[in-house]
Amino acid sequence: MNLHAPGLEDELVRLEPFEQGHVAYLKDFGAVEAMWDWMPDIPTGKSADAYAAHICSLQKRGTLVAFTMFRQSDNAFAGVVDYDFISRTHRRVRISNFWYTEEARGKGFFQASQCLLIRRALDWGAKRVGWIVPAEAKSAVRAIERLGAKQEGLLRSYYRFAGGGWADMALHAMLRDEAELALHRIKLERELAEDKGDSAS
Image 1 (cartoon, rainbow, N blue to C red):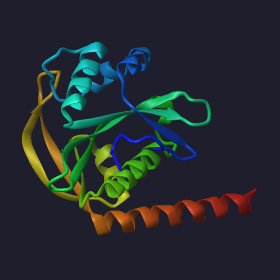
Image 2 (cartoon, rainbow, N blue to C red):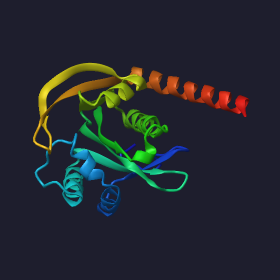
Image 3 (tube, one colour):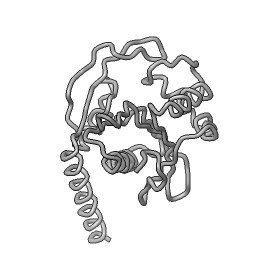
Image 4 (cartoon, one colour):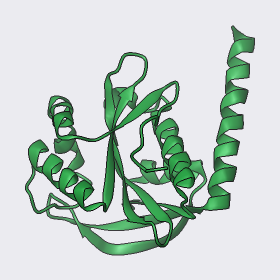
């Protein structure tokens, strides 16, 4: 199973491998401009085209696999996310650089897309799935921990952001058994919520 293989979708969201043509979505939604608030500085500049060129370059090297997210109900652009820190030898990946449109926030897209990525990583053979986010991004930290990831540490002044500031980065991870348990728990929670919804209708 390749990390970028097709079929990464559920009833809510579909993840397609990022390609140069997807840069139009980033421009239309102002995604890159918003991401500079938390994205590490990159050598190619601060524009949607620069971001796309940077991502495509890393994908060619095999050090990153990026995805564009779409809402299943109407194929609307929902955000971007990627795997980085990929090591087949050490069987580890990291889920990073995720950004969701305003319309996709608070509606289950984060959990759905992250679960798809975790499942894909496990099918790929990962023994460890990690996350790295700015420690100041409290909502992102809480969302990752709600998935079941454990915080493992804090990297002080680890990234220089595009705006010029330096950020402490929080490290989280799940080991393989923890990830399997987390996916099972989330599946049961979803089924319970659906049963309650059916009962209320």
